Length: 265
Image 1 (cartoon, rainbow, N blue to C red):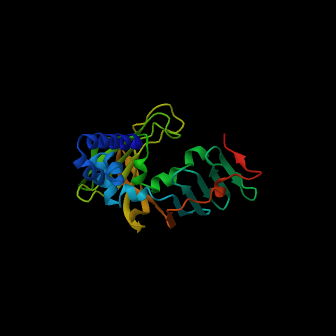
Image 2 (cartoon, one colour; image 1 turned 135 degrees about the vertical axis):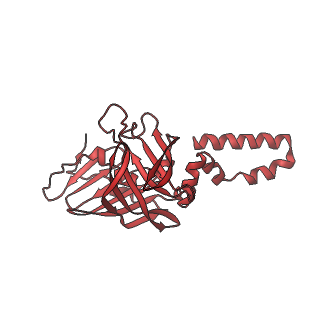
Image 3 (cartoon, helix red, strand yellow; image 1 turned 90 degrees about the horizontal axis):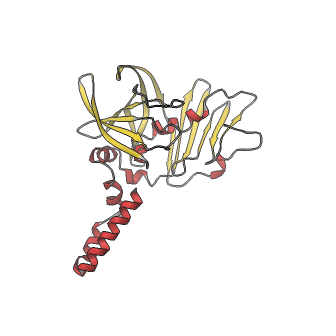
């Protein structure tokens, strides 16, 4: 969609230039790549992106890595932001996606018992909010505002075109501060393994941000219990440690499976 819009704008510019040579240099100078990129999003989405450093800056990044402390030790996630190749390494297993195969490498005889297809990309997606909603194949609608502890947050409903990701029926709602545009809440449905959309929204609070390369990204997120599609009380926190955000792509070899690794069907 972005490429198509950019092509149309350039074509319109060329046609205008043929009719009036005096306009040629002015029109071309006024249309920048950044203008084209940001203009494809609704105003409220752009407002949220801008509050976090801008989608154009985010799009220059190619590597994202972060660590989470789990009960059995550190879990390190590394993602190529352009290809979405992923490697999740824990003390007992490595879960990888090489662009074709989803695979697991079990360590020291520890049997992998997780749901690899459900977990693939999950925490990266939560971490990369709000920028991850700038992906292709997404539609935006205005959602009913969320009111929590006397404060009201406008909402943006995010849905996916058919065939996008493992769970295209998933929906997300980003709730943001009306004045600053900063993201404050995420509501999300879980439809993995189901044949229809869910109306049951879970809630995560985003109220602890850190600056990384000029971008405002989560330092931690709070998980909330919920009832009737409303957050009730905090019941856990996930911290993101050792965050790396780079303009260079990660080494492709780290995503490749080795002899003895198992492909997830």
